[in-house]
Image 1 (cartoon, one colour):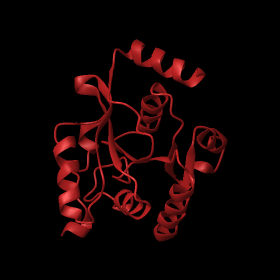
Image 2: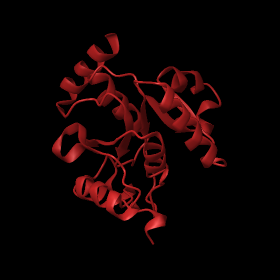
Image 3: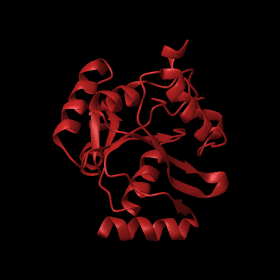
Length: 186
């Protein structure tokens, strides 16, 4: 309740409009991922709707003085050297947890890259949960949730849904945006 009030107050002060509603369960893609502030904005989006998500974060952020804070806010360390193990761990968790919500920055980096990571589709497909497209879009001063879909297993078709939704969204640092495409589509 306290987090929800805080998020609603900050959102109001920032003069942002919240759209959509928090899904009951699933994998939530936070994009565009262009700055360190994206973690904070996705927490605001989730807390605004009263949800307490798990957020996949690179393992290195758990070292040092901010590690306890990242963990407290729902951060889950990502071992980038063992992505298959990460996918299986979340599939197992989704199967045993009715309120499974996992936020993933599918771009995998705050810098401009060539491809998104496919883990969000793999986790959702194997766990049989939907993907919900979440966003923070400074030019339109909106944030929230877009469409949800159940991954079909056809990477190109699934990514067409993603591309259509994020086509005009820029993120905090537009020059760092990575176009939604997967290496598996090539």
